[in-house]
Image (cartoon, rainbow, N blue to C red; front, side):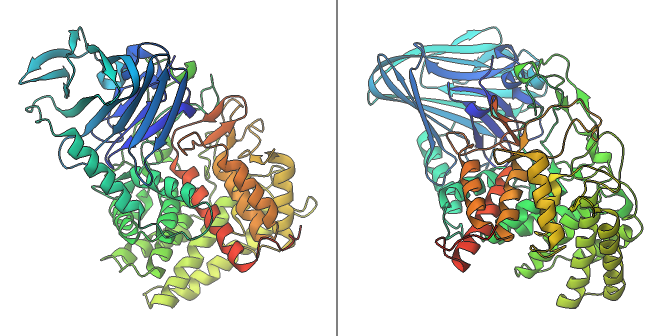
Length: 597
């Protein structure tokens, strides 16, 4: 069985990514892009589906891991009865073929080691041919090929490469793997020490520009580095996660492919990057977005491929049993064809924030935005599948209507603030119409709370964002009542469920973990409504759920740990934004002041 989700760490080169477990096994990697077929897929099955393991022969009795400060270079120390070794893993910034390097260093004593390189191309389906060529080993399967070079003598086996070696204190071994198209010549090897220095310098220079003066700086920097690693550098697109089909419940079927760019998630990521001072990344995402949505406004999608691809058919891979036997394993995502009205609000809000930050306008950018707002004028009254991409049929979700209000509000403000051409007065009238309808149809006066959908008796975690987007003031009685209702119906030990999954709204069997982004939304809602001490305590509680290298997935279960695709951009964005909200309140109001509850 593969290691648990929590036991993994991320490697990346801003084009693609790999996950390495604490036992030294890389059991997930998609090359050369985030959404390419996996080369190593043991994470969704077992060793038969592809891995690259470097580990002591004797079981390690202690493991310590860390990222180098501000970097994506991972160091893992493994203690055995005979000594200690350090494994340094990284993917250099892309300036040629994608590479994964592993440097093994002897720290203490003499440790017997074993290396097993067993790629299985095509998501674990294709056993490669292996042969020697010009001082390297070449592994080929269909359109994919890998070139392996190491300072230890390998043994070639059918479909794999192995080696056994011993390291004493002060000695080291260097292993390099490069992907290339099988119809091209294999790439030349490079100096691992030089690549390590280059990689460390790249990440520390980038993270050194983080603008966050408040508390929890280490957690914020690690989250921002993770978000940068999930950015596809050639286009500026930001993937939701580098994995597919990691389950929201062990043994369940809520398993989805997140290796694409959701407009919603990327817009929220943009906020985090802008507030941290990264205008270049904001500009690149803005340009990716305008290219992706170009065309007929009615064809706008909720998610795209990393280069703006629109056709993302959802398929099931029957040969993969799934992580912890959680089937099915899916690639592609059918949510691309859904109507999700909230996306308009997130998109307009993000573009407005970009403009307010001083990023110069894009050529024809406003033309695209105006066309989308005019489309929303004819669509906001329709039901949709909502932020949670339900598969139980469209409804009039309250959060979707609120985000339509945001879209009209930000569009009108953009015309007034930046002198753009548009019917600001008309958009204000529509904005006010949306607001009135939500307060009339989305609010349950008897229960004192907004509801998940018009006419529903359920609440929803997305309602926590109402004061955060400016729909109502934080101390409005309807906001305070909604926060209390969410706490009563969806919160346990500070962890928030998206909604009651036994209410049959999503068309799926019940059973998922607590949703971490909405748990951070509760931090924000508590903070802005004056319950700062509770918000701070909950934030610290959520930070404690990170794994040993500071990463979070989409969901959490007290028994199973982290669940869902990993690491999750949405969650790390929420962490960064909560830290910013709390830091701002700490400046305005000393921590020693008593909270109002």
